[in-house]
Image 1 (cartoon, rainbow, N blue to C red):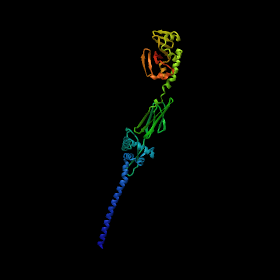
Image 2 (cartoon, one colour):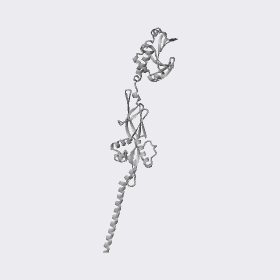
Image 3 (cartoon, helix red, strand yellow):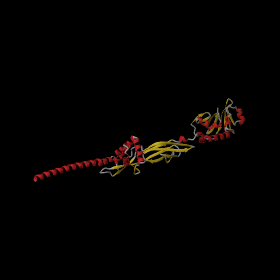
Image 4 (cartoon, rainbow, N blue to C red):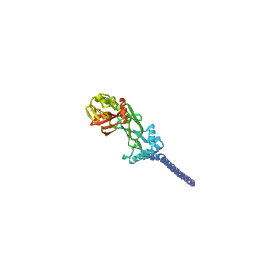
Length: 356
């Protein structure tokens, strides 16, 4: 009997040892499983920059939505797709974003010194699992500055009105990072100037776009000056000579006797020039070479009507104001003037010269 008890006890103890070993093994496996399935992801989740980079590269929308917030709310699917596409479109952009996240987390809760090129996110610490922390990324609005070279222009972003800008006051807009279609439109002088640019907002702390619209709405020279020039020439030439510009042009090449027959004797005469009240006639070989008609305008008054000349040159007749070659042809063609026309500045007064 004693021997049987001894054998039984031995078996019992052996079974207990086996059970203990099996229990330890099961516990070890359970701990390993917990570490692998629970602790490891929690530890990895703490590496926010790596989680972010992997989600973008693998197009893991679920993880990305858990990580990135817009206006303190998780991104919607459309917003997720748009932002992930924008980040992945430029490898350097993604690298800068990852570096920004890593720097911000390493310095948390202190604010990272803002010397970097871009500032896309603000980190917010969350309660993580076990002893690990987790962070969410909250998108920062970026600055877009829109400049134009005209009076008030309407600015739109993705076809939605955003405000007005002019050459003195750019339009400053705040938008979340991403790609946008920015448009400018202005109407003036019966014309419409418009342009559209695709703009990447977020690659820099402030993004500036400049629209050059002035040339599109610039008035035609005839529209800008024509009516005033016509009135000026007709009125002043008629007032000085009693005749139209076309009638005065007909005297080019005629004799002095024909001129005096029409206008009478001059008030003054010197060498080859006769002076009348309001105009002068220059002769060569007894024929009219040129006629200068007083426009009764100062230099500033003529500039206000005809604009500034391209250049000036000094000749014996005075200072010649040089306009584009098409200026007189376009504006004065209606006058049927066949001779050469020039604007002359002399003694602070402006003259119209007709000559061969």
